[in-house]
Length: 213
Image 1 (cartoon, rainbow, N blue to C red):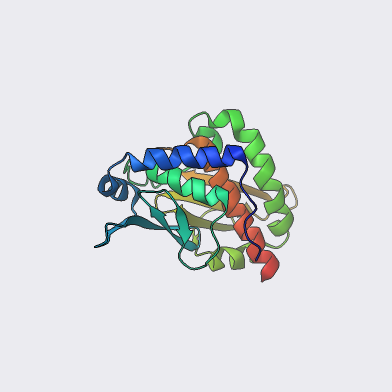
Image 2 (image 1 turned 120 degrees about the vertical axis):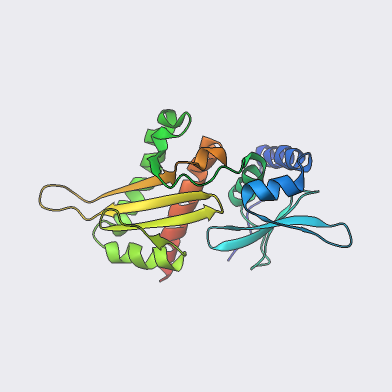
């Protein structure tokens, strides 16, 4: 696995802004609202620990630096920023227990077509004719089976940001179809543009798992 590419100036700026916002918030309250573990060590070092997809990460409250627990490689910019934004925006709302489409998120209708165009075609190409591949990939990523469609799994992309992928096999009348849904509370934990990123990360992780299995 290669090291992440150098960050652009814009990416550096977005990280700097997020780190500054995190540093201004009470860490105990952050952990409670985000469902993350907070540790204050005897040397004064304090950090959050939380899962993102099938990895575990630590985020320093003082510096906003995010590190992977299970690898020495730094996380990609998208995961780094997603975790910081999650810690910043989490408001502690319980999971809704109902699934909504991206267009139902705040301002989601504006970006719905673009998000679907980036996620649905690759999922259909990989799994439309081979739903058993989705079954294997979802289980490898810790997905929980759901009683929807023909193959459906829910994923905790972050502790309180849950997504679902639902595949319909299709028949003589209808072609295979796939949809990506969000727990109704997702908007209380990430802005909609970050939820689009979370969707892309999940889809990418599934496809990579399929290629390597």
